[in-house]
Image 1 (cartoon, rainbow, N blue to C red):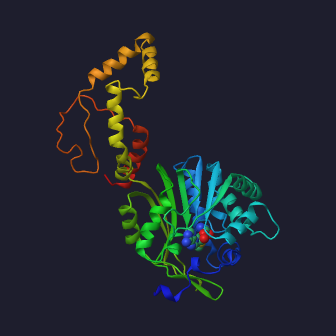
Image 2 (spheres, rainbow, N blue to C red):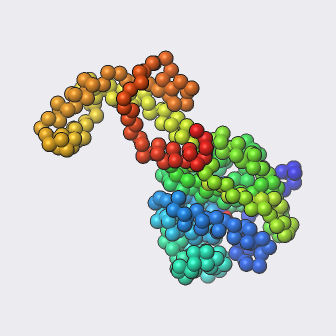
Image 3 (tube, protein in one colour):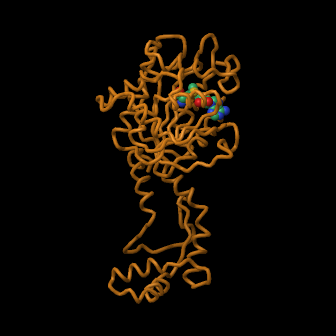
Length: 364
Ligand SMILES: C[S@@+](CC[C@H](N)C(=O)[O-])C[C@H]1O[C@@H](n2cnc3c(N)ncnc32)[C@H](O)[C@@H]1O
């Protein structure tokens, strides 16, 4: 389908309440069990499984929606919401402040409480979301630095529903935007992404809006090429009950940063780290001070006074500092090292997390 035939969300005056009323808030809306029911069920499964945890979740880009934050608020103490349009932000903030005339999310809140076995009242659940949302930040994906001037931390979970295919006018843009979306993800963190296969438009009233069409092959390739490992992919075939939208399947994919990408993002630190280490070995002025660790070890060994002796022992024992690059076929290049009796690796915390994903993603 020619993309020029349809309006683009980001180029038009947009009525946020119109979008909510058409697709998300009214239980009589056709296909609401797909548009809202599918994400609610999948997010409930993800968060209740315990696989995805952390302190902070970032939602990109939320529109004026609330439904997808309901289960997340059980796990994450802090939710940061990112949104592009001012009207959407205002609509969302109306709901946060319980303003009269704010959107009614009771359908979704009740559905989540039901999935959870009515653990709490739906109003309590909504208030939990209100308390968890700590920040609403504006972004524009067409900028090189979409969040400018705001700087956000990398977090353990990034969530994004029905966004990439709206903001990307072609497949190259989709790949670029995918990287922007995931730049806020920690190594070891999870990205939870909802989209649709073979969708070309959605309608609000008489207006048709553009959606970038792609299929499962493209999505898998885009994720792999960008350095991600798919953890899980679920698809829901459409019942095609109305002409308001035309997807063939909804898709929910969870993924993490691959081991290779995690390592290569560290590569830029390698040379300075080697220099720093050599400074310490030569006792250069301004070298890092490891006395705390040396004293702690001597104390463990019952001899606190000897910490400088312990450090000198390390200096004498280090015979070689070899540079490596794990992205190469031969990471040590021309250096040939013998096989040894013990190999030690101390960014184990992150590697173990990523390594665990490696196994399930079968990308060794
Ligand atoms: C269909 S809405 C999805 C909203 C929400 N995630 C939901 O599930 O209801 C598409 C989102 O893309 C955002 N968007 C459109 N153009 C954008 C741009 N240039 N930069 C950033 N976000 C944009 C909109 O503001 C909106 O939040």
